[in-house]
Length: 275
Image (spheres, helix red, strand yellow):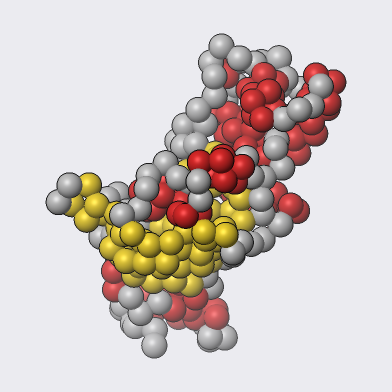
């Protein structure tokens, strides 16, 4: 579990995070969502120590990260896996070498043990025949899976994902979502995902923090989001008429209201509000 309390962060005169508090839960996919400029990326960078908050606390399983010395932070970071937005693979390294890189940096395994561990995680992400390929030789979805394999190779307690579906087609995005969700459950990790992908929100959003102009605007899960009364959140999530119609139908289903297709179409066409 990760708790952050009253986090504030400014760059010059611009306030980016304004008194943000939230609890990130273990064994769940915790999403941070919001428009560009809402503060979600800065918040994630504060959580992993890339930015220092101006004030507030970040607490990992009862230990105050903001009060740690450099050695303490270094030890904690070895328990953190990171999936970057563009995968951030080394072009000159094979898939196997990319995944092995954290083991070379931080583990005391011998070469045979490293290769065995790499084989384990590549099998986990369904890339058993890609060891000797270079990033330029694999698809965008495969690169994401390599990035996930590298992020979990040290068996981290915490997994951070920055826009994991960026640049992927909808079907591949769903596969990445399912993979992250599966890994989170299997290893009981604390997973934090920055995203504005609405499929991710609705499919794996077990604990969602919606940021608006540097502040916490709404917290809930992917079932509660359908019934949200937050106008700002609804304008962000259900921006198009298609998504608003989908929300209306989900609300009808959740309330157990049965209507045939003709009545449903008539209701949506007339813009009837679902209370």
